[in-house]
Length: 276
Image (cartoon, rainbow, N blue to C red):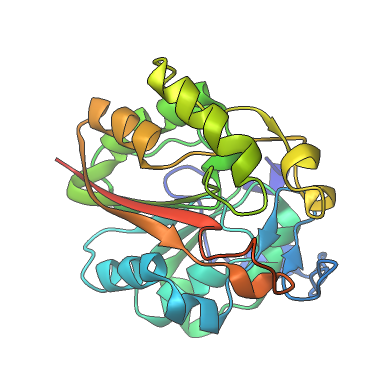
């Protein structure tokens, strides 16, 4: 966590804080491109920022998040929000958002793209999920974990779900997007082992796959280990925390790579659950 954000409690630093504008000017306003030129490469090599306007329109999960935010009475938190594209989309729709991101380069880049007219609905938060983040009970309407928890261990995910269950108001929702074992580029290698481990009773059968082994062309922008999953472990863990799973399905990411039969629309997996 950057020292600038030390000492701020509650949701984080209000975007209206005048010191934030001064602090943001110390950081670049450009973001590095991936090798394909179709996505933004994260500074800390925790994946790629792939949310553009077309993707937002095509994703059933993003559509669900946006529609939910329009009637939310409390803030939504965008955990691991990258360069802030989803945060900005929600702000443009009138939502109140906590933009959470551990890399301050991303956070400041995203902040500098936000319209000043939306500052009143924005908080910036630099704390790491789940160990450093905490909010009052029943203070949030929604929690977004879009392309985040496949970087976490089972213990971190379970601890995070327990916290989220406290943070959300009754009826609040959690929105998740993860790498599934069905991804065409590694399905034959991962899915049989995943299914076998699940049948044998492993509650997190997709933990700790080598990035270089399953996604060699993207590994330069990823951490060494990835945690693939689908609805089975997520549903089990969420229901233990009192959530009701409402919907899950694949989200296509085909357009971000060269055309290949291995890209068949199962590159991402989305799930929506409600606090019961």
